[in-house]
Amino acid sequence: MSRYPASPDEIFDEFVADYRHILDDDLVSVVLFGRATTGMWKPKESEINFLLIVKPAALETIGRILPLVKKWQKRAVAVPMVMSEEYLLSSLDSFPLEFFNLIHSHKLIFGKDVLTPLHISMELLRLQCENQIKGKLVHLRAEFLATQGNVKKIRKLIQATIPAFTHVFKGLLTFKGLEVADQPEAVFKAAAETYSLDQAVLERVLQVGRSRGKLDEKEGIPLMEKYIAEIRKLAFAIDQTK
Image (cartoon, rainbow, N blue to C red; front, side, top):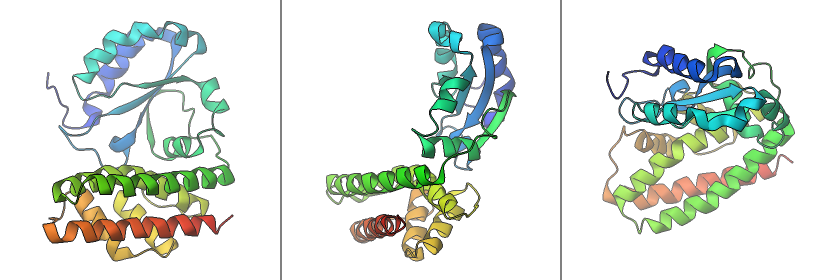
């Protein structure tokens, strides 16, 4: 048995069988989400993310799945997100962006499809996207300063921001009534066009973030300054949509 699967679908049958064996009828759904559904998953680098929908009573004895969590972590599977359908339905207004991303970027592996029929309030989505962008802007600026201009640290910082900004950009595009593919390239391009951001800056950020372009010593600091400026511009644009 290979420790790291070459692709997520290699483990679906065994993963579901393991959890069905432990949870039996308490297992309602197994859903794949995260990088494995957005074209960003890389063998030996990325984790595989699953959402387990279980019956409410099963949450009271959730410790029984601990041996499975340990087993599957050895095969690049993240600790699963576990919730009941009732909790999910009651939380849509609390976490509109998170559930929006689940609804639009998931793959049902087993059981009932509880995500596809759900509806997210567009105003709540816009509000959380605004909060996320403004919060991430502050953190991005602080984390940039923490790099002390070291180009290797700047590259790692940029790489770490791509998944988060892809999710927020996708939410903002949906608020504008636009449908785009889940791939970061498509999302970043559409966000630049829709919110009048500098396409060249975001393309370069994406190149670096996706390890498709060298970042030399002279470029690191100016690129980060431009990146932060574009996120600041986006925060202002969102604020004007109120």
